[in-house]
Image 1 (spheres, rainbow, N blue to C red):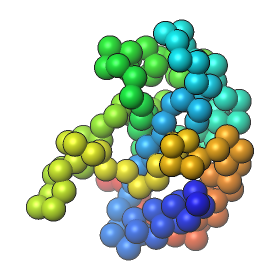
Image 2: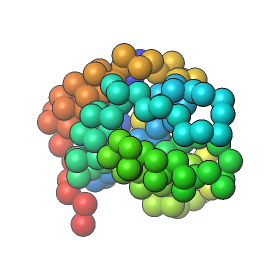
Image 3: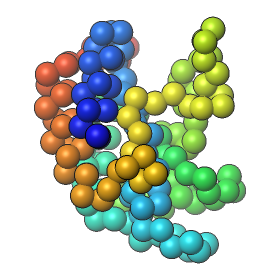
Length: 146
């Protein structure tokens, strides 16, 4: 359940003394309607204010996640910024996290919370994301980034 993932993200980051929560957010059926066409998809209204809220928190790093072709990445990034006021830091990558002895993050980017319809997320879960994040960022405060 998404609320558990958000709480675990804050608990783990606090325990590790990390200042960032990485949100991997899928495009289709999550922040935009799936249209199976080359046109830009229609934004899902419930997603916009929550993503804007998340991006206002200093501990948040938003990563756009999609199987769309690489040549469309910039087009999607611009669309979501211009149409929805949503600013994503990365697309299908997280260069802030280096490979470790036990993990290759060039293959699977590191994230703390996954928002993806294929992982069970539904459009009506956006309110839960907002409410849970407000609670857990207060309950498990993180250090400020340097």
